[in-house]
Length: 353
Image (cartoon, rainbow, N blue to C red; front, side, top):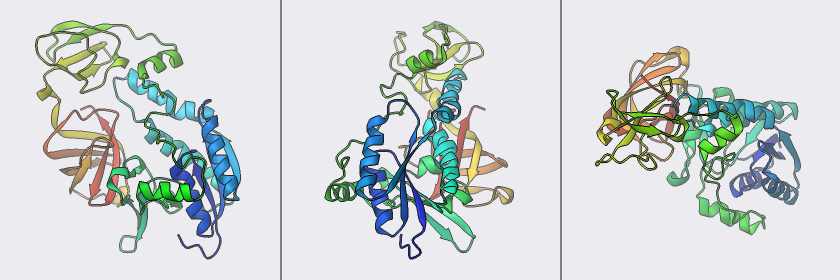
């Protein structure tokens, strides 16, 4: 992070320890840093206060961007719509794409800043052979966040700095404690920020005002097994909370919003070796010069183990992925992200086929 020209950087802060230490490292490297936070919901005043406190301690100007309207339009509305369609969304992906590396980049330009600094555990390198910026995993595998960053474009990768990419979490907390940051021992957030209690169905009902009627549990062939409580209460692979006793374990293997049916079946029906994805963003190559067939590994959930597979592009932003071994419950709406070792090749959204 050596910065001999004292370039200006906008620090994307959350109020947590990671972005605070990223800010410290940027300032220590000579960047003319501006602390910032995105106001996304009405209940993050404590986080904003913590981010402001760290900014003051580091001698940075601080600005809060009110993105609540845009967050509702780009993230919350899509979150609700995905559940209505029988899919399981990943709102952090939408937020990164539309806000943190979208609107925040616009604010970066307005302030005359050349870079955005965030507290993600990931790395960016420029590959001279391909002439492209590459996204790499963070050094600490357990904290790696490249999975939620696969949507970054070449322009965005050229301007983002991830100071924590080479660090372990323990070292980050030690830096924060040594600097006297108010959030040095603050717990990491584990929940979706706008549904902190994890009651997604309750949030959707209260936020949308929609009524999701009960419908039939059915087998894959259409045999009625019982009554479900509304499709927004279910996701592929779910076993608990079904409220039916069939004498043997059953899982949610499908959701049919058009007929308001939830499909139940044995675990073997969840196993798939072929999946499809759209909204695919390629990082290591240009979408206009796609490779024919790729051997790599894929991750179908944030913390899932990578699995070897063969990937065939089927269009500018669509792919077919064939795994060497069957995978449990690849879920429409979730992200599939490709890797070659530490290098994130790109990713997209799993779709039904």
